[in-house]
Length: 152
Image (cartoon, rainbow, N blue to C red; front, side, top):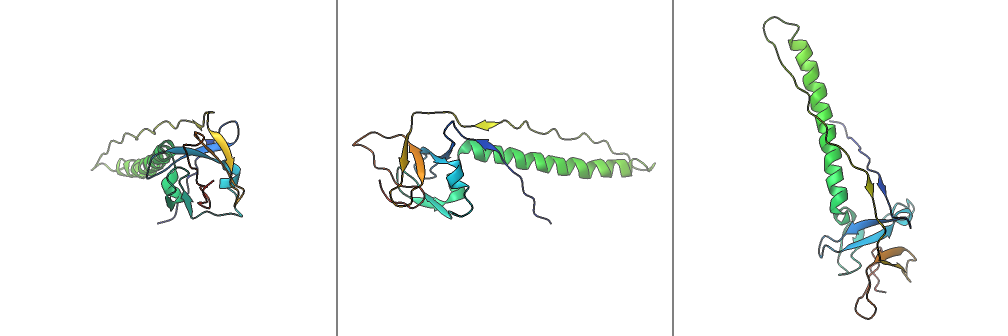
């Protein structure tokens, strides 16, 4: 079997930040898309800015992004099944012995993903100089850098 790559486009907010979600505390935070996608800096894991716990990057994708990826994978599967059964139907219907009716599966609509502007504050990490947006209450919250884990 060959490997298939599906691409997912996600538009950030007006500042270029996209939403991520902690797999542990389920808190949402935003990372600057340009920094996160920078090929010079690959990040095998991220730290939650709220609870500080690390995990693999793919566990931090928001539920909206995960759902969109599932829809893209399902549509690809439907496409492959429609193609295979369409060919089989045409081939079998040429003979007089077996007849096959085939109704193609309908693809699921893919919605456009766009982050909304929200009231988070932008922080720059003093250790690695990367940026993040979090909900922050002065004196109450402690913020960890998602890239290096240093508390701010």
